[in-house]
Each structure stands twice: as C-alpha cells, then as structure tokens.
Image (tube, rainbow over all chains, first blue to last red; front, top):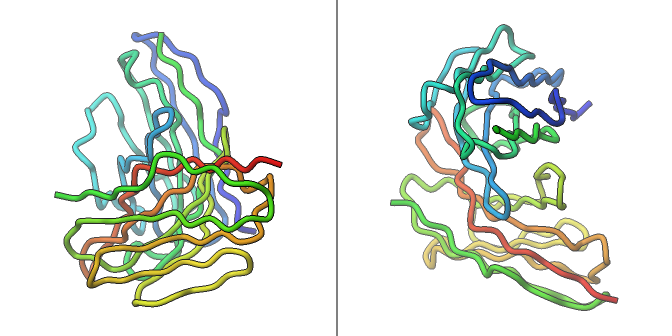
Length: 114
Length: 112
C-alpha cells in the first residue's frame, strides 16, 4: 500500500471559521509533510514531522497549526484564514526524513477561503 | 539563496522525444528528483539522481551533472497521457535532515 489519503477533498470556509485538514498513511513512514500549492506554481513546503515531532516550520503564519497525533496521522488546523490562503494543500510522507528517500503525495485538499 | 529554473512549457507530438531541463543553485545538495503532476492530481515520483550520470526507468530517463548544477528529464515515445506538469526538486539539507525544494515546473503538452 503506497497510498496517502487526505480529507476533505474540497473545503470552503469563511475567514472566521475553524477547520481541520486530515492526512493518513499506513506505509510505516516516519516523516510526514504539509505543502501548499497555488495554481500553476510548485508545491511549497510548510511543515515537516519526523518521528511525530515537528522538525521544520517554514515560517508559516500561526493561523496554520499542524498536529501529529500518531505516526500515521497528520492534521492541519486552520483558523482565521485569509482569502490568499486559498490553495491546494498537499500531504506527503517518506520512509525517513534524512537520506535518499521518495516522498509519496496525497491527492490534496482544495481550500477556498471566502 | 535557492533557485531552480525550468522552461515554463514544452510541446511535442505523440511518439516524439522531449527533454526538460533544470538548472539549480542551492546549498547542501544531496540529489535531484523529478515529479509528474497531472491537472488536479498529486505529484508522483518519477526518478532520482544522487550522482552524475543517467538513470533510466522505462520511457523516462534522468540525467545529472553536479559540476554544472544541471539536470534533465528525457521522455521517449511520448503518449497523450504524458501531458502534465513536471517538476525538478532538489534534495537539500544536512546529514540529519533533508527537504525537497521544487523547481518552477514545466507544462508538457503532447498532441496527436
């Protein structure tokens, strides 16, 4: 099983809402990632968890709050977002955070902030 | 700072061969990866080069020259389903942790 799943597929929220994005993998991978991708642009790294601990925060605004409840799950909590935060949010996982390793991406959550 | 440059768009016909170039500037370089992304889809891994030379995987090959900070993806016997965006990505960091930094992306359009 080389699948990373993400829910929901689409999300529309207002600027005062609180919502969460969920990501799950059952490949036994020890590193999980959140990326943000705007239309016709490359994915941009937001956060990295390695062994369930936050390893990298790429200076992401605090209105995005990641959480890794266990080795298979990764959440991204959203609060007080801005319209410019509308994008495709991709989750990925890899066997290890260090070393020559392939990242497996989920299908993404397309977020629209009104 | 980091930068990875790719052509924005490449067009070709079915059955042809196309090369997508990637030039990069980065520190702590560990290797160059290539990902394919169809419209509305997730990036999927194609190939990885850690050392200079050519890596071949079926119809796709990838090349790296570390001294020139340059790589390319070669797609042979093009099919309509190859129409997608292709991203090079540098694996950079240190021995403890590495991350992917993606290039600007190349949109490949394959016509009949």
